[in-house]
Image (cartoon, rainbow, N blue to C red; front, side, top):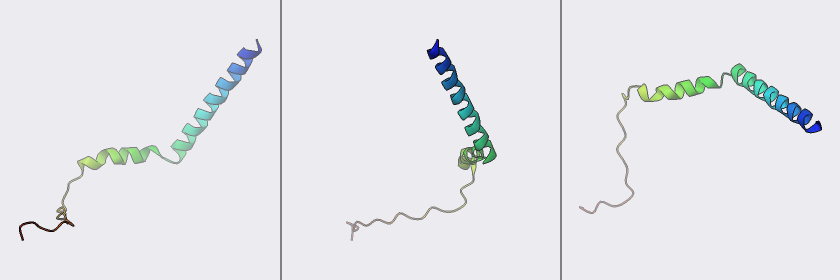
Length: 61
């Protein structure tokens, strides 16, 4: 019977810990960063890419 009491206590501590971590995450608005990252591929690329600089000598010279 003592094992069941211990198991219920540990389960309640895990639930309380997850609720506290969720509240902390909501308070600091951590989920907004994921929303912003998901929209990055939709932005227009107006800047031209820089030409690649090669450190190897050109063999055609």
